[in-house]
Length: 278
Image (cartoon, rainbow, N blue to C red; front, side):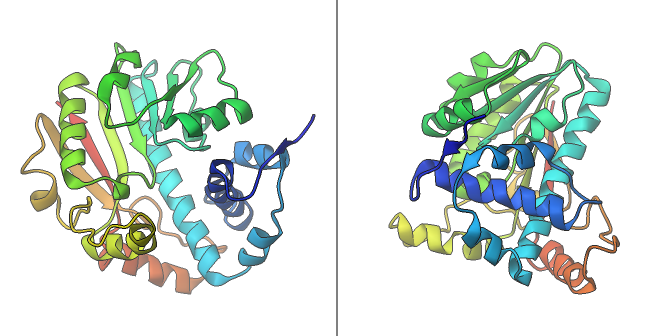
């Protein structure tokens, strides 16, 4: 099989970093996370992974891999939980990149939708051609005409990993309320963080795009203050991002990492938020 060449400083390269992180998760924390599809895809790429391999030995990058592992397993748990009662539901990956969490949750009956911007979907279609029950949709999430492409008569579960930090709060309000009206009985799960953590995460990005303030960007310090006052037709709950679904007592996880995880869930208010549309 011919390998797909990835050029430096391109859209394709920006998608490689989170893909490699999922490979690092699988290598470093095999009892907590497995993503064989990521491993397979990386083997098909013509790309110099040496810089990423060198960085992967550092503690900061390994803890970052643990964060990715927890986020993806948390979201996958919620997807699979919904599929228990809605086996033929639509599973929708919002801002998918090259992530295959939806495919990893496939129960043989559900329909899987991957949504991202056109340039990303173009790369995805080349590397991961959609199968019979998988649909890739090129769309801006804020242009809700993509709703029309989701077959939701048997239920729908949406999930987003590392996406909504880059949305303004007003955009989130409009998107979530449109989803609540259009998909009653559906479920949305996503990772969130408090205002302090979002400022840290977006600091470099904000400078690159010329934004001087991030106060308008979506963060969640409190469900009661930051979501419930404006959410229409839905109930909200949350668990800790790092320790809400797993105690991380696996031997592969250094004790120091568990301490950092408690700090993340606590001080940084890192959460997996679940909204059940009513």
